[in-house]
Image (cartoon, rainbow, N blue to C red):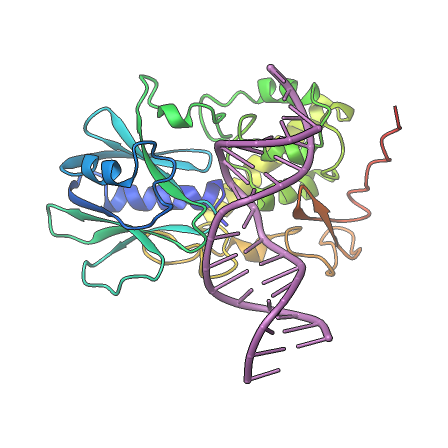
Length: 286
DNA sequence: CTTTTCTCCTGTATGC
DNA sequence: TGCATACAGGAGAAAA
């Protein structure tokens, strides 16, 4: 499930294999892949004809290819999206929804997505280099624009659960269910604790851990549990061998040995240690 | 306005 | 064996 480190691995692959090349033809074949492109799939394909890719950029889980005009091709991988660079005669994947051909007759770029939560869209690039359709997303912890003190201040005034805040991409971007659980385990905080009940240093520590765990995952090529996530060459990451919380229900906590638990939160699974991360006391009825 | 819930999708695993 | 069900979850629309 691509979160920031996995998307960054894909961005680097695109930087190496696609930037500088000239698109001669784009085929949009999936019925849902262009649903966030307001003008529709035909318009998207037409406007991707005869353009040069000048950069591959990212904010949080959003990825985009800057084109030589004033637009960027926004790529979101959703749950299962892949950007694959492959020979044009490679067998077509079952869930391939878009294909790009280049003037150098080199390998094709393909967008493959089994669960179709991902998608492609064109959006104007703003002067600050961020596409309009990504402007509502907050900077991620690896950007110069990231202001952790400001994020801590905004979190401190929220009465919602801290895990919910970590997953809110308009507060800080790039963190998904896996790295949220890892950061909370490292910080020894239960995800249902209210932001407002935590001290600013604790909130800062959680964000520091989120940064660190994503940096470590990136160093290992990202996290993957199955064949759904691969980089542009088709290789998977290995960080899942280093997870302490996510998916660890029923196994011993790496810190204290207690059996890890799984709980439902926000209609998703959350993994934590009952001893290191005690549940908050129930909110007093008001 | 802010915050929370619902919904989109398909392959894999599990249970009867 | 076959069918039904649960599960995975990012993000935006809809609801509260």
